[in-house]
Length: 392
Image (cartoon, rainbow, N blue to C red; front, side):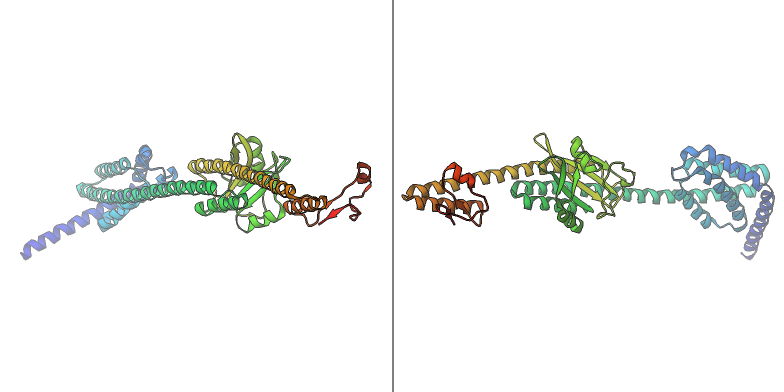
């Protein structure tokens, strides 16, 4: 047994000496080895991943040549496995890795004895083993990233549907514009985590889009200032209402038509969506984010649908307000008529008329003045009530 152990040790020692000698001979041809490896990497560039820049290939060729020469000295296969995993992370392709092993074997066959050739096999096997494990880890990691990305898309889509439903519910259940508009802009901002959401409506002249609801402190200040943007002017809202089309700036720094609002300094992306009801533009919705390219195609489509719902809701609220005013006027007329019919004296009729009209109009004072056309025209409006006038 002792003799056998001694023989094994002697063989291993001879092999180490042979490998060291082979290393010395190969080291002289190091530049040739680097050149061959570089050509292989360049010839198999199609198999590399996009993350690996071409300028990195000569560096990898040099690192592989030096690693192989060191391996002939140390025999550290574990380090080579780690190196294989690193090559996978860098983006080296399978074809390149296989060709590297073939090139190393041929190089050893051309310049040294069989001992180095066998070492090249061990080196190549360890390198490929580490590379395969590294690629497996990358695949698992990328699969997890894809799963999370899909989950984010699903969650955002579910959020979009839920928000659309909430906006639809608010639009159908709130008929007071003073309550409806703030509710909608806050709902959209909160659900999508946007920086700012504002809602503009035309003024009576149709020349300006006037802010009617805005989120946060910036919105409050702009409402107090009576913030408005000229239709067709140098703003995204003005352009949107003038052209009845959405305008999206995924990077506001590159947007030519935009109002740079000092109250919203962190805006990086913005979209202006026209509010169109029954084919008529009535205003616009502005949505702003602190992130560049914050809006996906799905976001734009969903928000435009919401904008259409909001436009119809605003029109319905205005129609409801008008109907309420007409109904109130009819009730007032009916009440006054009913009371006048029960009155028999002129003084009572006049007093009743003045009182009811004053209450209906919310006036603090009302006067009925009697007389001929000439005498009535001769009175100044500021004049105090005279004889024959009825005041309440």
